[in-house]
Each structure stands twice: as C-alpha cells, then as structure tokens.
Image (cartoon, rainbow, N blue to C red; front, side):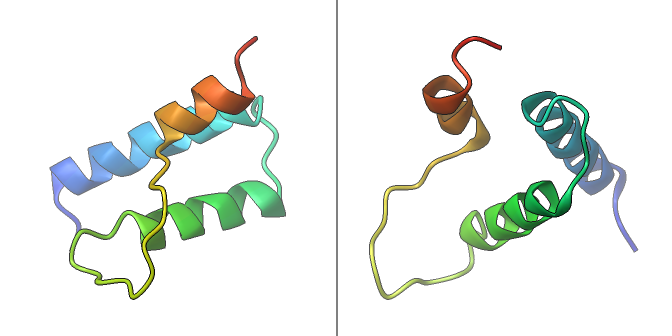
Amino acid sequence: AVSEEQGEIFHQDIKEMERRYQGKWNVSMTADYCWTLLRDDPCKVHKRKSDKRTFEIKKKRYYKDL
C-alpha cells in the first residue's frame, strides 16, 4: 500500500519530469526517474562518494531557459 504522502511525492516528481522533458514521455525519462529513485534512497549506503544532484540542481544547470 502507498500512503497519500508517498503518492503526492510521486506525482510531484512526475510533474517536474514532464516539465523537464516538455511533456514528451520516452525511455530516457523513465530511466532518469528510476536512477533518481535509486540515488536518492536515504537508507542506501554507497561505497563511492559522488556529487548528489537533485532535480532542482539539474534543472538549473541544464534547463536554464525553461
């Protein structure tokens, strides 16, 4: 079962991705979302350190004109 809060977060994430991809669903968009879920898991411990980029940071860096 999915809580209302989890559902709301999911819909916000999808809305942001639709905006980033200009409403065009494709395989890249789905893959981007899946990798974001894996990367942003707070319970997961990664062996390598990396720069964590969120949707907002990506949006500012790659989609400045949108």
